[in-house]
Length: 184
Image (cartoon, rainbow, N blue to C red; front, side, top):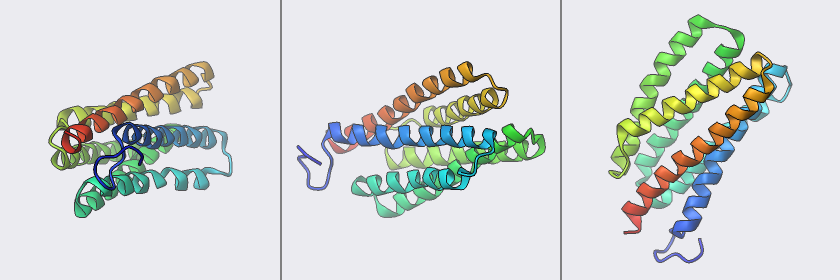
């Protein structure tokens, strides 16, 4: 929190770095989960627990800037988002189409609710854009899981590169909105 003008706020640069770190960690740990799940490794619960730290980290950061109640709602919605994403990854890997359809419907509802809530927290965020970003990230992640399951390892690795770029873009969109709201 160096170079801040307002007590408790990160500098703009540090805020950007923290958001990028948290979101990159999320996609990295999700990737580890996909690899472990497909490979049948015994570390899946440990990795899932680490993935679930992401909403806690983001909520801790958001509480510096946003109302505590709004942040609590965000944390719950994002935790649900992660639970549904993990469920869909598991469905893709297991080939469970019935569960997949149910989880996808719930995911789409959650993406709409989460993006609406974020855009209400910060009017500089565009709800339809956020909803689209969340759905696209899931599509990319499910494609990554499918490629890993089908042993298309080069394509799987390349897809993760795309996911990493995409998640940095999402972090930067959130950062830009926070800068407009809190630093202008």
